[in-house]
Length: 173
Image 1 (spheres, rainbow, N blue to C red):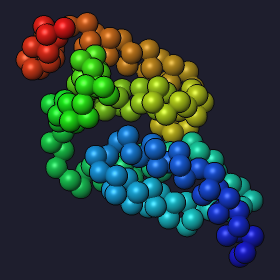
Image 2 (image 1 turned 60 degrees about the vertical axis):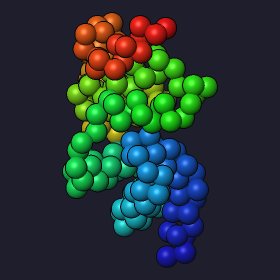
Image 3 (image 1 turned 90 degrees about the vertical axis):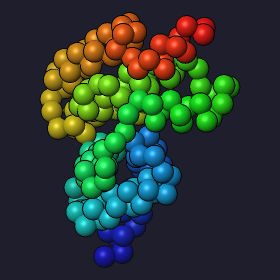
Image 4 (image 1 turned 135 degrees about the vertical axis):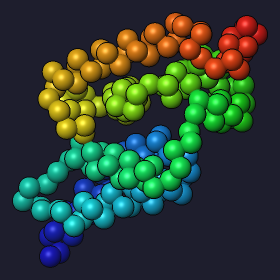
C-alpha cells in the first residue's frame, strides 16, 4: 500500500499544476477549479495502479469529463458578453479589442471545436495527447482541428456574426 501511495503522490506532484491550469481555463471561479482538480485526482486515486500508471492525457480527459459534469449541473447561461466584462475588468493593459473578439468568437464555436482549440493552443497538447483526451484517433484530431480553425477564422473575419457591442469597439480602434 505504501508503494502505491508513493507512486500516486509522485503522479500528483508532477501533474497537479497542469490539471489545475486546464480546469482554471474552463471554469469561472478559482475555488471551484481547485475543487474540480481534487475531484479529478480522487477519481485517479480510485483507479490508480502503479503497474499500469496513466499520464497527463488520461488526467486531462478525466478533468474534461468532470468539468462537463459541473457545467451540466449548473445553468449554462454563458455568453460572449460575460467574457467581455471579464476582460474589461482586467484593464486595458491585459485585454485588447482583439482578445475580446477572440473570446466572443470562441464562445460562438461549437463546444467540441472550442475544446479542441483550447487543448492544442491554450494547453499546448500534441495531436497524440489531444486524441487521448477527447477519445479519438490522431488523424481525426488533425481533421477536426482544421475545421475548428476555419470556423474560428470565419467568425473573426465576419464582423456581422459578433455582438453589436464588439462591432462598436472595433470602430473605436
